[in-house]
Length: 445
Image (cartoon, rainbow, N blue to C red; front, side, top):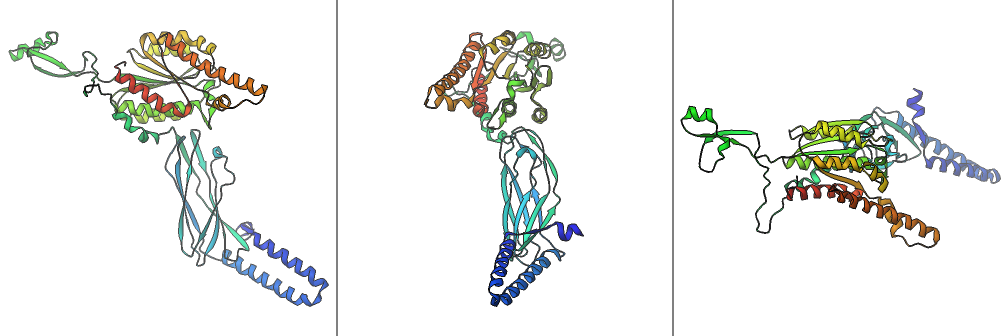
């Protein structure tokens, strides 16, 4: 009873302003006795208005309602739509302040929306949420602070709306980049170049021998039964194995525009995997840090895209140095066929690359290795700024040195026959897709 009639009661600003004016009026009436009757009358009217306002809000069986409408999962780094439906069940118009208990990851402590509702009216509030990290986002209750047209007091109505929504890697970008899956490279004559990789061992059918067929495919048992030469027919092998390898070491914990490099790599891996599957390639995922991580074998089955999404959702960054020797041994034992290995990692210095270059060269001997590492886009402002004193000259010189060393790393990889991409975090997905399509067009895979 106390909670219903007292704890949900809040006084509005208009109440305190009116109370302050009444106090001032009584002080003036103390010196001017003729104003005392008018002061008492106004005070009684004020009390009556407060009682009427209280009765309209608290002595009622109907009250405003609210509900939250969201998707069953959010996309990391994208704008996700959230809707609030608010309905006024009173027979008079109300003024409403809406407070939604948002997840702690957002750190939005002053989220308030104001809404004016007529009698029996329902309105919708739409806003967009952009999460910057994966995981579970816990929404709380919805609070409505409702006041009548008098706006002397307000009552809090709480709607139970607690729910947990998982934030997955940026699956909304899959539709954005679907057009890339149909991209092909045409030769100058206008004919599409087709990729043919010898003869596959995937059996298709047995057919009669015709001039020009490979005599090595003769099926002698079928020829004996048929009384004529029969040959085995095999399907052309058009799909290749592609593995996205994600480094979860300490350098991938660096943050740009609120998102870590690991999240940028995961989002790009998800989009690239979707395009590779549409290109009929087999896609797998490997994660590693100072110890072996998750492994999803390359495949192109229908459920592979969902398997990749669920695997990437669970990945977290470690704060230890990544073990590339362990990665090499793991790939050597698990991947037996030549594949395209797309390694998402980061090197901040040439010495950091030199510590791992032997393992990268060993991987490149048996596979086509593509190393993707990141530009430090936070230094661009320093590099492009105009130095005003000696200290700023030193800072700008150091920023230029870091940027130049990144380019040296790319040249060092090229010297050993290792493909590389030096990309800003924002352009990572586009650059990775373009490089994959380029390798497909060059028949490098």
